[in-house]
Structure formats: C-alpha cells, structure tokens
Image 1 (cartoon, rainbow, N blue to C red):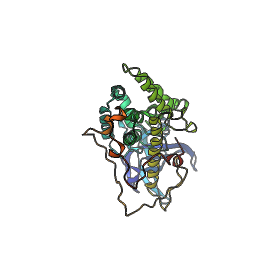
Image 2: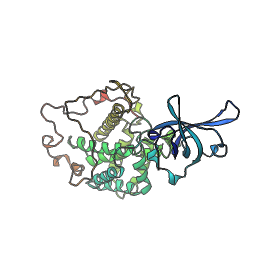
Image 3: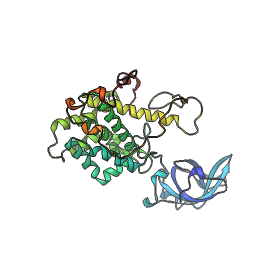
Image 4: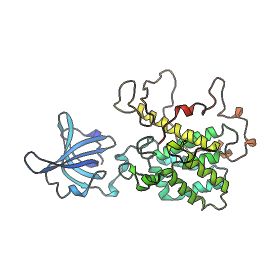
Length: 374
C-alpha cells in the first residue's frame, strides 16, 4: 500500500514507493561515501540518506525513476528525513503514475465518454467518422486520456489534455451556436484535435518533459500531419473541409509570435484560437488562486499571465463549486452544426443570446486581455 510523503511521521518505519527527484554521492566525514536523494510523490518531497550497502543498487535507478524503499523516518532541524535501509527499481506493473504526479480532479473515463457522446451527435458524417476512427485506436485513446495539456503552463497534470479539450469543446458549442453561419461540427472537431499532437510531443510516463519530436517539430505541425493522415482513411472526405480543419490546427495559437505559422483566416479558426487562449488562462489563474500553503491577497507571478492574481473572492455572489461531466442524454445544439445558417433559429431565441444589460460580444476585448500563448 502506498504511503505518501504527507503521511510520514517521525520514527515511522516504512516500505513504500517514491519518485526519485535527485540522486548524488557525497563524502562522509569519516571517510567513504553515502547516497543523498530527494524522493517524492504528488503530496511532497523528502530528503533521504543511504549510508551503507548501497553500492550494488544505487546504479540500477536514476532521476525520474520510481523506486521501492525500506527505511526509517527521522527528524533533522525540525524537518523530516528518511534513512534508507534498502531500495530497488520498481517494475512497470508496480507503478501507478497518479501517486507521483498531479492528476485531473475529474473522472477521466466519464470525461472521455462525454466527449464520445458529443462526437456521436455530429450531423457531418465525415467529421464524425474521422474522430471515431481516431479514438477507436486503443493506444491513441489511452494517450489522449493520460497526457497533460502542457508541461507547466496550463492543465499541467495527468488527464489535463482531455480536461482542456472537453472544456474547449463545450465553449465552442455555445459560442458557435451564438453566431450565424458557423459550422459547429467543424469548430468542435478543431477543439477536439487542436492539441492532439501533444500525445506525442510530451513524455509523461515519468516526469513531464518533451520528446525529441516535441523539441524538433512541435505539436502544431505534429497534429496537422497526424490528422492529415487520418483524413486520407475517410472515404470521400471533402477537400474544402480538409483545408478548413487543417488550417484551424495550424492557426490555433492565434498569432505568428505565439508559434502559429498561419493567422486565423476563418470564423471557426478565430473562435477556436480565442477560446483556447481563454480556457488555458482561466485554468492557470484558478490553479494559482487555489494553491495550497499560499497566503496573502496576491498570488505569485504566473508565467503564462505574467502577473500576480488577486486571491480575495467575493462572498455575496453564488459561484460554481464544481464542473460536472456527464454523458449527454438529449439532443444538443451540436447536432445543428452542419446545417445552413438559414435553418438556425434567430439569435434572440437562442439560449446563448444576449439578455438585457449584459455584454454580448465575447471577442470584443479578449484580444487586449489575452496575450501570452504556450
């Protein structure tokens, strides 16, 4: 049974697993060497010393490996430390990555089921077949459900890519049905696939890092190539639809200086770029506000926002405590995505339409508010 760092107490004898954060050999004052390690899991870190009989085992594991440790917890200068008696490298079947890395707070299988339910409602048969083909591959689905959305900037945790993609899908459905003439199925497909390349851009079987392809090519180009290959497998996929979808993937960072080789040149690409930026930054801001052990009215400076965030919240207004992810049980507005604008109800009749005294254009000032991009 896993014992977490946050559960350790002085004089406790433990047999459990940890992620190796650092490892080095140091000299004893009395001669000889000892191993100094930093071990950790998702709840924290602990310094560990391995004084004797480490020579045969110390080279069998390294930083970012997960090890099984037997030892004694003690205290030095009011800080808990660990004296290691034995340690060995864990086998893959002994490892649960959610013990060592931050993880989405939502149920991954429930989110994935909701996403597949939304795809199942598509009116456009080519986009529906494309996405169903992609996620019918078990390894692709496994990666998409496990991958973080980024290494550090936004949704940087296991399941973060799926959480971010589903959130963006919901935003795109709402905004897409607010405006006349928007192909909502196309817009939602772009939302599903806009960071698809991150399943191979990032490495997340141990510590989060970039793969060689991630360093050399990047997820925008990677996902464009991947999706272009999958489009060829869909019989009769329209060339114009292909052009629009691939453009959305290449342009979704919004600006050339943010890494996009093309600026958004269609309404769907523009909406996707702004909402992707919005969802990324709202998550980063909320994560800062809720950081444990933080104090004061202001957060630390956010790398993605380049500012501190005011932590004090209003107490009189109701707030959403939790986002619920559920399988759709009724027909939703997404099924209208590929119909002509003339078949849509007038904006005043839509759920997303403006109410008296409210701000109606969600893009009027976003360009001034949202400037950084990962």
